Amino acid sequence: MDPRRNSHWLKEAIAPDENDCPSLGGDDSADICIVGGGFTGLWTAIQLKQQDSSLKVALIEKDVCGAGASGRNGGFVLSWWAKFLSLEKICGGEEAVRLAKASADSVDAIGEFCHQQGIDAHYRRDGWLWAATGEQQIDSWDGTMNAVGRYQQYPFKRWQPEEVSARSGSGKHLAGIFEPTAASVQPAELARGLRRVALERGVRIFEHTPMTKLKDGAQPVIVTSHGTIRANKVVLAINAWSIRFMPIRRAIVVVSSDIVITGAMPERLEEIGWRNGMTISDGRMLVHYYRTTRDGRIAFGKGGMHGNLPYGGHVGTKLDGPSPLADDVTKWLNWTYPKLRGVRAADSWRGPIDRSKSGLPYFGALEGRPNVLYGVGYSGNGVGPCHVGGRILASLALEKQDEWSECGLVRPLGRDFPPEPIRYFGGKLVRSAIARSDAAADAGRAPGPLTHYLASFAPAGLSPFKGQKT
Image (cartoon, rainbow, N blue to C red; front, side):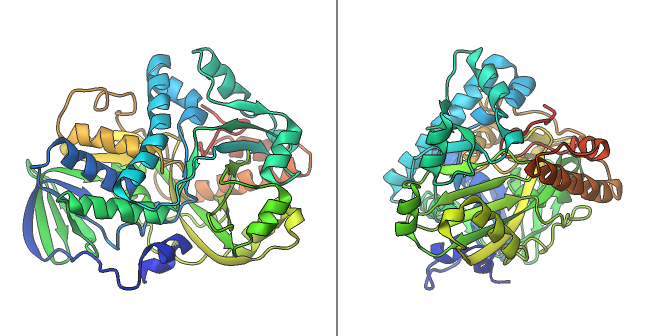
């Protein structure tokens, strides 16, 4: 499949005459080899060359850079403040504050990097609205706000209901809090810009080069269809596809996300009052997330709707290409924005999300394989945090002892999800219960006790929902 079909973003980002990087041919070597040409891999490569320009850094990508999750997401550049309860539980209060601040700083750093490097990623720092589109969702943010307040941190602004509906363009938004730090980007343009900068700094990138095997040793060997790379360190930056490794598969579960995008309609957005690039998500368990684009489109996504979970360690292509649920997602767009009077989708796509139980990523070295590093589990919030992830993985690869290599998110992989076939069939049961729970909330009633029990096993997502276990 042409990777350009994987999202509208990628179709925009890759010029017809743009050349792909060559595939690996023959045997090669590197100081550090990165597997994966998305945000985590590219930020890591850039960080490595920035810290030591003499390093031999190679990066392999099975398609083209940006064809994976980095070119298919909603383009929300968020911090970790919304996930503070989980951060505090994992890292302790002071470290949680430091990492949340670092993630917020990364939002600005990404914008500044784009400006300095001439990357037109459509960066707009217009904030994020954590909204409620149902009574059950109201005040789902209170626990987070109270927790950050204990540390004299106030990243959110509580808006009055009338301000929420007016500035979001929809009366379906009943309440909400606003985080001004957040931004939005055209994610594939950002990925392609990072690719260009990495190449300019001497990173050797091999596209259309899938890893077929990873051999252990003092110098691990990445095996591909047409050659090998021997490296001192290997960095696995392959998002959901990292479930091929059993230790990682126990720590994350892969779910779907489906997105539609409308045609350009800036005048209609102006009419309803949605006048900037503010990103919005609601408090559903199967979250809705949406934003406008620079040319006046709406990109509207729904997480976990598909329910077509991968079995074992194979993601395959079932989450590639146009969304088979585009009509359903479009109905939710029209439900959220009835004033737009039956707006239609111009394009759609889907992709995988690597969700950890806590909603926060893991970083470290595989057990018994100290030269194989991983960064995985961003749980639908990776565009901004991948910048932090690049710092962490670069420090780990260079064996530094600093605030990144020793941060609270560098930790052993959890054993949070069961093996197959319990994982697959249990995941379907939980996902079905989540959908029923959301439907019950929409109808203004409580879910049944069995539904409530099964839904309680849902891993964390973009932001906490009521009833989430932290």
